[in-house]
Amino acid sequence: MQPCNDVSLVHIIESDEDLTNSNLCCCEYVNRNQERTHILECCCNCVEFDQCCENLLCCHGISHHQVFRVMTMIADKLRIPWRGGARKTAIDTLLPIILVPGLLALAASGVWYSFGVFMCLPLVLLYLHNILLKYIPNTKFFFVWAITTIVITHIMFQWNIVDLLMIETGENILFYMLFLGSLFCFVRTRILSKSNHVKNYSVLPSSSTESIVNMSDDSVNSLTTSFNIRESICTECRKQIPPRAYHCNICNVCVYKRDLHCVWLDCCIGEKNHLMYVIGLLLLSICMLYSANLILICVCAPYYLFLTIQMPQDCSEVYVDYKYAQFFVLAIYFLFISVFLFCLLTHEVYMISLGMTGHEWRLSSTRYYYCLRPTSVYSRGFWKNWKLFFANNS
Image (cartoon, rainbow, N blue to C red; front, side, top):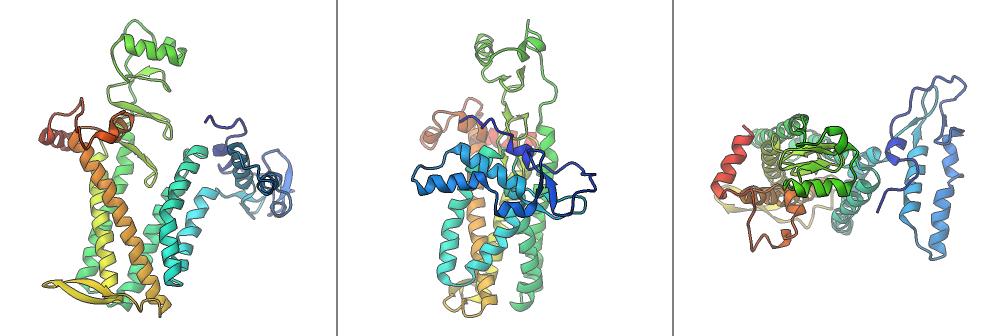
């Protein structure tokens, strides 16, 4: 579906320009219609929201256009009092800071609360992923969610769990080695992401750059076919790009060997930062699994699995004390994260073994049958694919 013709929500949620009008009080602002408004009007003047409620009560349903208008209205009215006029606060940035600690606190209230939160959490995140990327392509929601999780992990583990559960120094050091190692890899992934951007475009034979820019999509496709260079002309940039370079609609740039746009890191994964991304997934998944087991064997009755390796056995009394319930819920949250990371890591390892990128796999019409027919036009064999992967990232 094409985006709505209203004012783009991306521009609505951007920070305001400096308001120099001294007549505005701290709770007033100039809205998207250039009208002087008070932030308390959001409680009594929400025409778009009223229309949605009326449609629901009349069983008419809500269109995507109405959802867009409601989100635009919320983004425009969500403000905080400030000297010289109320300032906008991006709702997609503010929500994770409230949701992550709020959901963890709710889950610690009882076993059924925990069951409900952790059953609904993956579905809610999947729904928000589809909705936010449709209406706010450059959303920071998932990036802020990841940052909030990191901060909560550090605060809870260092200031509460280590002291109350008497975590040994060696165990704490191992946790932070894995934790900081994964953070280093992900920071390097973000830094190296710009090196994947295709900056120097080559010019098509017997065709100037200006003529390509003015071409229609059909002309670009026909020109691509005539030169027998599949997917070597970007329909967005209207210029010739190297083979295996693909356009990212979120970064608005072509990325060489684009694997995916990671919303949790808010950057594209390509040739130069793929290795750091994979190592970060491995370290963080081990860290989350290790810390979850470390917490569970302290709050639950443990048993020895093998020699000195302990595993939790009886967790029936963790909800008696709210503090220990919080630790237990945090451990379950870590387990969810580790499972998610292991799934991502498994997919990355499989794609590297096939000599494919995630973008090429999604474009392939036979992607659902790669378990039966693991072939790729770029594959050089299992060992050479991995050798080339490490060589390109060195």
